Length: 139
Image (cartoon, rainbow, N blue to C red; front, side):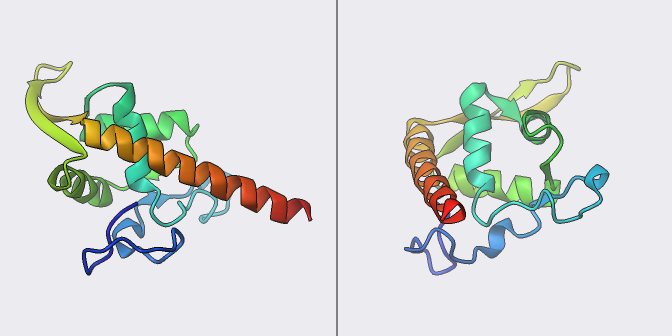
């Protein structure tokens, strides 16, 4: 879970996190601009999951999230790069310069052990929340 502005972790996972606002836009094909809006605080978890698949550059991360979500989530580059930078400072990812498939230099991001642990913990938290929401909707 991302840190709050004060540097401490919010105890409520649904607590406001302005860092991830406007991180993902909706699917314009659905006609509902909010249909793809991401729940606050999920961008970093999706980045961690994407990097768990393989190291990639920022544009590749954005493409993979859009691809896996079948176009529902589109990552705003203005939110992606600051998130990657925060995650690197927190030790969740590390970066290195590599040549891309087009033989251009790009910064590639790799998941660290700390990032894997964070992904496991955040995924478990989301599973608990999804189950709770399902129970409420079924009531």
